[in-house]
Each structure stands twice: as C-alpha cells, then as structure tokens.
Image (cartoon, rainbow, N blue to C red; front, side):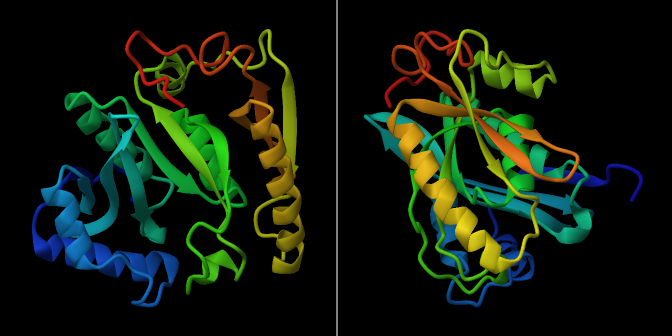
Length: 263
C-alpha cells in the first residue's frame, strides 16, 4: 500500500461491532473469554461512548472503543481499546483513530481522554507520549489480572494511565510537530528500559524494577512528559517534577482556561 486508502468513521451497526470482536482475536490472540463482546460495543454506542472504525474499502482494519466517565463531576472519555491489523500498522491509522476520538470529544465539550497501556511496550509508549502528547502520573498494578493474550507474556498486567489533555498547549504542540517544552526549569529524572522484544524472564525483573521506581516518583509528584529512544532500541521515560501542584507552576503542560485540573 503506497497511498492512503482507508477512512475513519463512527460505527453504529451490530455487524460492524462483530468485526471489532474478530479484530481483537486477531490482534491480541485473545480467547473469547477475554474479548470485549458485541453487546458492550452496543452499550458504548448508545450511552455516549465512542465506537470508531478504520476501513480499507469495505474491510475494517482498525477500531477504537471508549466509554464516558466522570472525574469530580467533570466528563471525560476512557479509551478502553484501540487496535490495528498488523498488515496496516505504520500507516498512520492508529493516529487517525485517536484524532477522531479527540475531535468527537471536543465537539461535545469534553477536554480529557484517558487510557491504560503497558510500560514495557515501548513502541506504543512512544506513540502515546511523543506522537499524541499524553502525560502520566499513575502506575496501576495488575489491572486486568491474567489474560489469554500471548502478547502479555504471562506477566501481571501493570499499566501506566495516560492522560490526554486535549486542549493543553503541550498536546497542541506535539500534534503540530513542534518540540514540547521539556526540562526547562524542572527537576528531571529518567527511567530506562531495554529494547522491546527482550526475553520474558528478563522482562519480569524489569517490570518489578520500574514498578517500584514509577510508584516512588509519582508519589513525589513527578510526571512522565516525554520518552527518548536510543540507537540500540532502549528507551528512557522522562519524568519532571511539578513544582507547585499539577499542572500549575509546571512548564511542560500549560492547560488553557477551563481545562480539567482536578487530579
């Protein structure tokens, strides 16, 4: 594929939701026990959620699923799942799905989307942090328990919680390809990880190390703002300390008037 031949749109039909169930099985290798069933896509579509598909002609090649939620009485979207078929990756489809979520949320007056991701999956981490502009200040322990996906390697499903502040200057800059203001007048710490694809026995030790490190630093009011990649494939999560709360007084995120500052 040399040209962009896909389209992204909201989905409302049960037949489309069934394709999304099939996509889960193909992308993650889930058993049917762990896949989100068709009925939950129906619920999302009818209760203010987001059910968005990416299509190559008539074939669905990716999707995003989000549910509405509240933080201290303020609405936000929790993006539970996003997937793109392996043959269609690195074509910008994942980014288009996330931008469609952002446009839909902003059109409804919602300025925040959250989702979880595995800190050991560094390619996805780079996409979330450096391509979308999320920030992170929570580490969640074994969120989903044991799953049938071979991609999880039998490890505890520890996750970082991505916060996408849709109207922040940080997000606007990142989406426009402008360098963010990282490290200016801030205390910076790195958390290093080996290249993706390390053997499972090694990843178990890495997970334990970064679990403790993230939890400690988040407890000290540090926030993940960026990620740097080395030539050997290793990465470093970049954390900066909020000087006087979040995001006030912190140079990397400058939320506009009225943006969510509740947590």
